[in-house]
Image 1 (spheres, rainbow, N blue to C red):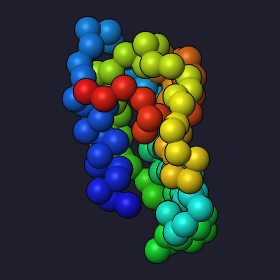
Image 2 (image 1 turned 45 degrees about the vertical axis):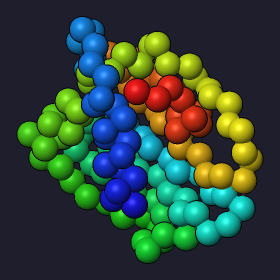
Image 3 (image 1 turned 45 degrees about the horizontal axis):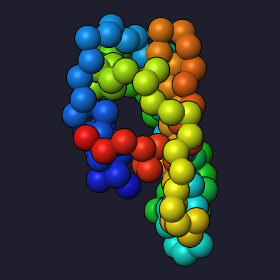
Length: 124
């Protein structure tokens, strides 16, 4: 799971933008597949709260909470603030229905952007 989250971090940090984005919320959701794919959500709140919910096929099933201090949270969100979310589609078409998906919800400059099947989105 850690490799997957790091992959998502790389996806968003690979592209830079001139826009000054301020993120205050981020939610990553991995959807199930027809096999044994892990299914979970992890939310990062502006208070520093991190909420993980393991749904299926994960080592950690159920809800787990952690807390980031302000410096950790700011550094974490900063990794995602270089991308222009407004340019992304709200939904991407997947070619195979039996594969897991990645949904992302982010609040940037006070506006929520939901991206369904983000893993099928643009490649950089």
